[in-house]
Image 1 (cartoon, rainbow, N blue to C red):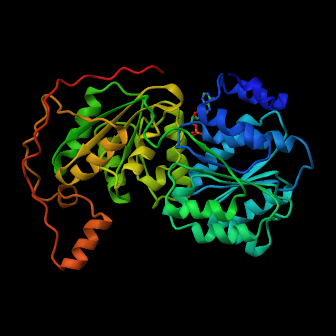
Image 2: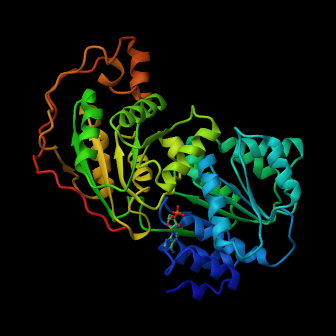
Image 3: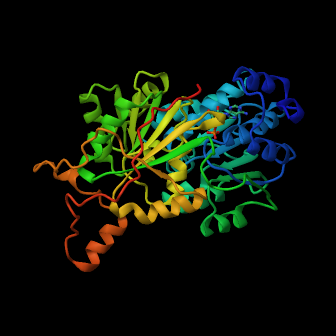
Amino acid sequence: MSFISFNLHPQITAGVKALGYDTPTPVQREAIPPVLQGHDVMALAQTGTGKTAAFVLPILDRLMKGPRRGVRALVIAPTRELSEQICEAIRSLGRQTGLRSTTVYGGVSMNLQIQKLRAGVEIVVACPGRLLDHIGQGTINLSQMEVLVLDEADRMFDMGFLPDIRKIIRHVPAKRQTLLFSATMPDDIRSLVQEVLHAPVIVQIGHTAPADTVCHALYPVNQHLKTALLIELLHHTDTESVLIFTRTKHRAKRVGQQLEKAGYRAASLQGNLSQNKRQEALDGFRDGSYQILVATDIAARGIDVSSISHVINYDMPDTADAYTHRIGRTGRAAKTGDAFTFIVREDEDIVRSIERVLGEKVERRTLDGFDYKKSAPVRDTEFARPPRTPQRMRQQRTSGAPIRTRQGARQPAAVRKPFRSSVHSS
Ligand code: AMP
C-alpha cells in the first residue's frame, strides 16, 4: 500500500514525499480513510507509530477546500514540546498547501500568540491551560472550528487536564469531527470518548507493548553506582543520540551535569527550565549538538528525534505504560533501538509487569570490568537512595516512620554476559 491510495490533495502528497515517507504505518493505514470520510475516530496508538501524520494528513486534505484565515482545526496536546512537534509536522507535511498553523501554550508571551491568531491561521495546536486563557479573554475565535483532535489523551488525563478539556469542549461547535489518540485506555478516557465522540470508528494497533524494533536489557545495580555505571556503559556502547530518563527534575539536572563533567555533550530537560532553555536543549538534541539528553517523563513527552539509538532508564518508571512511552522514543518508524534500564531491588514488581506486557523475560546484564561492589560515598546522600515515589511517600505518611533503604545491600544475582556493543542501522 502506498500514500497514493488515500487520494490526498497533490500538494499534500508532495509534502509526504518530501519527508521521505514511502509506506503508511499501520495506524495511518487504519485511521486515514475513516478520518477522510468525516467519521469521529478513536485511535489507540502509542508514540512512535506515525500517529501524528495519521491525523495531520486528512486534516490538511479537508482544509484545502473551504475558507482560509479562520481556525478550522484545533489540536490539543499535553505539553509544549509535543505541541511544537505536531506544529512542525503540520508545517512539513503541509509545506506546499499554504495552510497556516500556530502553537498556543503557557510560559511564553501571550501577545505574540494573539498576533499570530489575529493574522489568521487555519490550525491551532494548543495546551489546555493557555488555550482556556485565550478563550476567556476572547483572543481566539473557535466558531468556525470543524475538527478537534485530542492527542495523547491518557497523558492529558495523567496530568490532570481532563476538567480543562471538558471546559474547552463547551466552547467549540457541537457540529464537528472529533479525533482522539491515546496510548492506553483507562476508564476516564473511555468515558470521555463516550461524552465527546459521536459513533467513533475505533482503530487499535495491536497492543500497547513497545515496538518490536527495540531490544530491551536490564542492568541490576545499587542506587549509588548508577551514574558510574551509566558513564561506563556509554563509554562501551556505540550510540547515536541517547535519551536518559530520571524520575525527578533534580536528578535530571544532576545527571546531565555529571555527564558533561565526564566529557559528554549532554543537556537536561526538566520542568524547572525556562521555555528558552527547554527549546535550546531540544534543538541541540535534535541537531546533534547534544548527543545525550537527560529528561523527566513529563518534559520528554513526545520528543521526536529520529536518530535516538538508546533510551536509558536511569530510574525505573512507575508503570509498564510509562515504560512503553519512554521506549517509544527509540526504534521509531522501522529503525532499531536499545532500551537499557537500571534496576534496584525495589523495581522487581514493575519489572514483572513490563515482562508481562512484553510477553517475555528481559535479559539481565552486567557490565564486564565494572566494580559493582564499590561502597557509597559518605556525602552523596541524594544519589545513594532511590528517589521518592508517590507510593513511598504514602508509605512514609501512613507509617510515620522514615523509609530506609538497604545501603550496600547485595544486588540480585545477575546473568553474567559479556557486554556487547550495539550496532544500529541509521
Ligand atoms: P509519531 O508517532 O507521529 O510521533 O511519528 C514517529 C516518527 O515516524 C516521526 O519521526 C515521523 O516523521 C515518522 N513517520 C511517520 N509516518 C511515517 C511513514 N509513513 N514512514 C516513515 N516515517 C514515518
